[in-house]
Amino acid sequence: MATKAIATKAKARSAKQADLLSLIETMRWEPGKGFLRLDQHLRRLNRSADALGFRSAPADLVKQLEAAVSGEAPLHVRLAMTFRGNVEITTEPFAAIADDTVWRIRIAETRLPSDDPMYRHKTTRREIYDTARAEFAEDDAQEVIMLNERGEICEGTTTNIFVEQPDGTLITPAISCGLIAGILRGDLIREGRAKSGLVKPQELTGARLFVGNSLRGLIRAELVEA
Image (cartoon, rainbow, N blue to C red; front, side, top):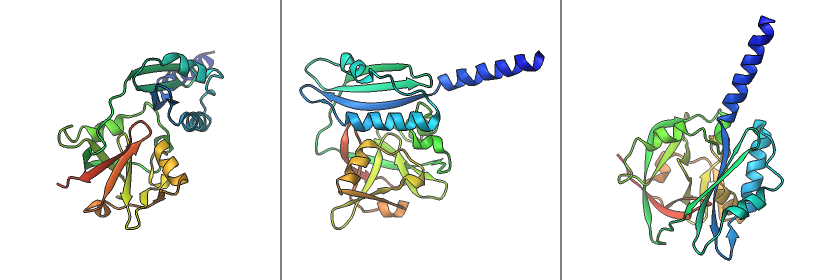
């Protein structure tokens, strides 16, 4: 009986810990256009749910999303789904940035382990990203880039990174480097505007750089070196 009680408590504790982890998707909604890249976001959500053993997204998820948005201004929409398939949708005004904006980026000391499959999925497990972001003040760097344990470029704390080549195409780090398959990143690769590969830190020096995600699109960037 004691052994059964211990096993039951361990199972309950494991379930509680799983409930603390949620899959997340952040997207933009625009009046008259609706959600940008909604199909891609939902496919990624379902792929991650399947890979991590989450319950599938609710059948009426699109209706829930549509019910959460309204108005005459763009919105930043955050979707969070728990292990049990419970969904929370929050919105806030989307503040666009000017087309000629250039973000300063810095490279973090914090490393992203390429062999941890959890970092291939967009979840609320963000401690490592928060640690990297905290290495620099917001005024010093608008985005912080992380390397993996082999010293390869992975991704930013909220964006993927792209390096422009002489022919105008973009190189972005491969998934095998240990990173989230960004929605914008996937679109650019499918369109032939970008391709994946290994990127070393020295390749960022003097290069034309961009960072981006589905919410904000591509943003020009420049590396600030120590």
